[in-house]
Image (cartoon, rainbow over the protein chains, first blue to last red):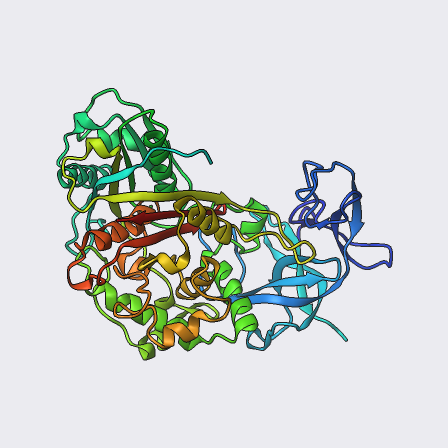
Length: 144
Length: 378
């Protein structure tokens, strides 16, 4: 084992590994003017709904419900996705009133249903060309 | 919108949609071959020559820089302004809308809108998604449609059999369209047993890709070479995304584009005799008809079952077979939607002719998002 290989997030700022309760949380923005919540963070610092620039960084709820899903049977074009095929995607509605798209893990893909409780997990996406392990956020069935 | 002068369609041109890739005995044809063929056909249809055309708007998605210039230089070099438009699947309608406005505003009297595409061979670079989302596997169009389909099923009770019926209807119509890539009908059983591509969508729920060219010439009425069976552009609308979330429901951009077009035309959904709805994926045709205002949400599957949208039905939809049969050359698709409405109103649709079609609506939508609506009338 080479110790030069690292575990790195797919992208900075998508989540925090240790939120206020010591567990991982997605990071989003809440508009202080209209209350709308965004994921991921608004890089340009502007609310798409009301155009206010007064945004606060927030930790999003760990749990939500499946709003929609699909099991993808073909490899996406471009070679960016290196995981298994088929793979499951879900839009998960969070209590904040937003829908977040993510990969679904730890479930028989035929068992995914609309309304199912999901929770956030941080999991391996794939190894990059340098041998680093790329981590990303996923959803898995909620442990009740 | 300011009141403009009347704009009429002078002529249309369309190539056969096919895969012109040189494989299995098929010829190799480049986008400019397809574009120029469609432009020449439109000129012939209009009884015009290239020197009659004062400006050109050309829609394409994957054809690179100056694609319209390359197609047009095979027809003529007269120095006219040529503007290339990339608006994903709505590129052709975006081009026609500008041509319509130029003539309506009396800037020009005769303008051509073209749309063409030779689809890239091999994997398409999906630049519509940020890299990290591509790494997560989000960049699969059918998966986006699949999730919308799951919602539609949840909210309306529509079934996979309903979606199969859309494919069956459109492929049946496509069998009557010599320009369609797919001219063989399919059965419900064949659709439901075709391979899954993104659950719950199957191979025969998806339109095939294709290469092709289209062109529409619009002009002021006095420039027409014949006053026989004149077709007027009653409306051209283009609407992009409107912010919405579960907390703040935004207006649907498709509905808004239809409403704007109906208002412009002074007509309503009940006045349409034929419709080209958007069927990249067969469930999409159902919710598209609902969003365009032809029935209430959740009603389209029942109306389809009852034959309402058949060629012989009360409101024939996708009489040329739609994207499902024609295939989908991105830049050419939107004008193919318009050309079928024109043919129907002119009474030139041959074996798929709808009786006494006086007015019709063509829709194209897609990435952006964009939603483009054209209404033509007698």
